[in-house]
Length: 454
Image (tube, rainbow, N blue to C red):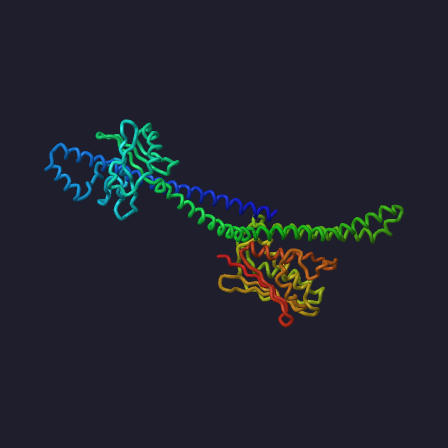
């Protein structure tokens, strides 16, 4: 289940990232194509204007005479005419001073690469004639011009792409005639190289992001996986603990059913065994309920609680238990220690630690219960002398159903391995921490740290 959840998590993230990247990259490519098209369109329109202006001046020169014609020729030789102020297609700003008429390089100065353009006149019969062949630095194949002429003649004024010929053209009808300018369509299709670069970059980014997603998916779902494993282990352990008493009860019941004629007095051993196992099951269910309550702070009513009073009371109550086990309880409890918490839960916490210490204390030894103040913290320690906890078991003593006895044998202590797990949950629900140290020399010490109430 967790594996499927991890796969869905990664797939959802990658799909979202992929869609975002596709939208962004498509937007970039469309914007680039639009800009390229506008640059080509501006160059085509500028060339038409230049051609029309040159034809107008040539016509004026012819009409005004040789002298004026010489002046016009001299003016033409001095440089190009700035046509940007009246060019409706030049959306990018004024044409660079280096622009020249038909066939010359028409750019926007040094800020961007120039776009070569060829200029043609469209005659009445639909044929195309080069406007300035002597000045043109590019040329279009005559067969291409003848093939495209009919299409262009029937088309309306404007800009279009001749995909079959790899050309972009602009047609403009003006006062002095109809002009057609051509440029290589590769200038419009420069966005394709950008798209290829973005595709490669996107593929690399997706690969890296996939690896990152796998890592974070495992990291994010690790607590869920651990909780799932603990839940399964809890169910398995609880089933194991319940299996033994249920087996005993069923066996006893079966014996009683097979011998109904046997007097009740002779069956007392089976009845007592059944009763003991029922009590054991009741204790187990009670501990499991306590653990569930400890994990949910909503079941507790928190209030300002006298921790000193609780520790003193619990230590006194376990005097008789300790006496039966030939163990003495020594206490050193600071007065007036208050915490914010549940009295019932704190009593369970302190009682569990003292009971556990008495249970595993060496015979004729003592259990020390100490409550002290350290800054803004209340520190409760319960120490006993006896067999130390194995170092490999230290980190597991607070786990549910954990005991050094892996077989979970049925002993007189009726320990289910839930007491310390309950103690940890209660401590953490009160904003505290619990730890244990154990050695043959110093004994075993459980220490609880809780924040003091203001």
